[in-house]
Length: 151
Image (cartoon, rainbow, N blue to C red):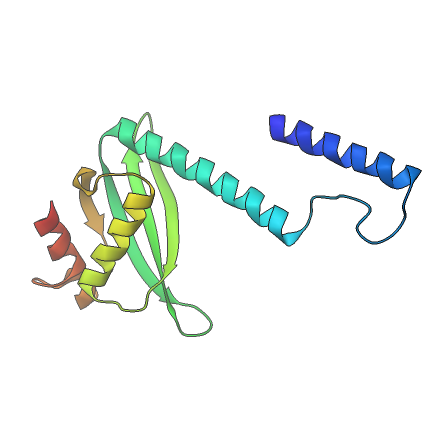
């Protein structure tokens, strides 16, 4: 509510200044520049991540689901989904990251980086789910095997 009120005030002041004086490019502040929009989106993303992280810490444990798919350019994109239980079961998409390599170890590294960004301990991860690909389910160097040895 505070942000909305502030933005409304800024826009109203801008309209008053625009109406009373200079007419031309840049004289009306709309707060719709690419930079402003990206800053607002980043702030919202940060708040959502903090909320998810706090919920997971309250739950005390979580499970992770990793899956990859190719985008239109043929590059692998990995989705990271965390599941946890508080008063209800929650499933949160926390990252979609381009993968340069698709080994089991690279997925463990990717997950570790995501969890560090969320300030979550990988030790709270009690389970994982993946597709049946060998890089995910391999007995020795697959993602699941490496995760089991981590915990």
